[in-house]
Amino acid sequence: MQKQRRQPKPVRLLQISDTHCYSDDNSRLEWSEPELYPNQSLIRLLAHLKKRAEDFDALVVSGDLVQEESAAAYRRVGEILQDFPLPVYTLPGNHDIPELLRTELVMACEQVSDQFHARFEDWHCLFLNTHAAGRPEGHMTPEQFFELEVQLDQIEPDEYAMLFMHHHPVPIGSPWMDRMGLQQADEFWLLLAKYPQVKAVSFGHVHSEFNQHYQLSEGRVVHTFSTPATCVQVKHIDEQLRFDHFSPAWRELSLFANGQLETRVHYLVD
Image (cartoon, rainbow, N blue to C red; front, top):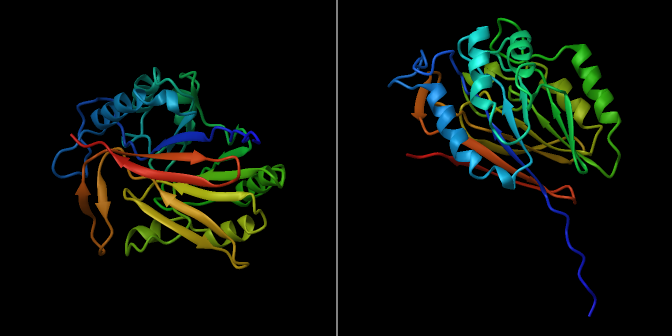
């Protein structure tokens, strides 16, 4: 009998987003009703994920780490993350200040990174910066598109890429949130159409779950999905902000050696 070849173990990632933290754990999220304390939600969620961390390779935090845009808030996030037992990859959202994220969190916390590119086996994870100072919507400059193209050019045809970003590059069907997506979405997808290695794009920002296959002009599809917030989730049914629930969320991803992936959102319920 022919011995079956053992399949390589998939790369497994955790993703959280929109932590909206403060320097004080007892500060409430100023636009939430009823009261919600985002630091406490993050602490609870990470305590839960630590119990399962040995099954995963890294944690991705996809933007809006803070609500209070201060050095002290980033230092507190660093204290919360400092004993998490996995490498942590961060990228900025519209509420972040990238310079403070780097100086007060990344440089102060050994396992936290803001690097653009991380490789896991044959999978390349690219962490995009769509932050624009003082703007809620997402932006990428010509220089950022060039950098992304340079990175994608270096990925071999038999390897795979997954992109993480804060702002959504596809409409999610929200009358108000879709105005705050990536403003250069057309240029973004024109660039990605050149690279069949790109299998998926994951984002935060929308405080809800979204999952869709985006079809490119030549018929190829890219899996796009959002990771809901660690704090408040919202509805996208009309022009007004409406809360859905306050259960912290995380996403689990399995990236397989054949270029396929599986992913699912979970909620931490009391």
